Image (tube, rainbow, N blue to C red; front, side, top):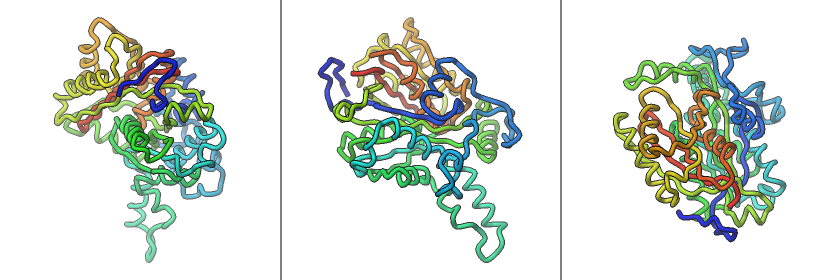
Length: 372
């Protein structure tokens, strides 16, 4: 997709015209931006209120409780992942200005990525079905928390979004996949604006599952601290953003995804996804001003770094490594990388966000930050 950057930019250019986040830095885009720009470590030790499982530290959203943030009504049975998504969507809609959802709710869709939904809810419900008292065994009010589209569906209901509603799961690359899916919805005229991003919750159950997968699987990875959070973006056409008085923060130039069958081929897959994305965006490697890699560590991270080093050669744009600050954000990783790119990118400069997942998927998204 080619995008003109002249004053009379194509009004159909897809732009990010708003974003918000619930992150280990706190609630809101401002807290996240301040943390990233200040290079602040948001991974903290146990506070006594949460069992971190096999980990000593985690990047949790501080002082977050559904009832405190969203109120008592409708939150009794709400899981943490859903609460994070609902709260983040509310902050984004407030930033976008009145009328985004109310004037034409059918025109606003939602694409939300997740790993498994709420791992804690799934495991708790399964346990209750085996240990609970007959004849009911389980609390039926908790069943909706066990399905993957709970967070996306509840966010749309809570904020009256009646456009297309989709849940995407793709490991570490989930946020990039959600952005690409949202772009397809807009290009095919299924809606006029989309809230897109990803959410991941921290729980003891997820901590143990991740730890066992990383330390006991065939492709062992660093068992570094986990994080949680949600990042959401308002994606719409440049013409619509201008018509509603919203300032574009970044333009979506291209996205490309490549699968690989074994980790030895990850480097080639990263190289191909980046090369093709840059070609589609009509951006030369030497024009890229910032790299935001997945920084997954271990052999997989080394292969991602090697692919980027080969592609950019002597041109070495700065790299923003988010994971060391927030922990492994799971399915929310790539969305937080996108938020970091929008935060740290310069005016009118191309930014490259990459992701590689151990299950065999790489992704690359090219943005041009600033106003077209």
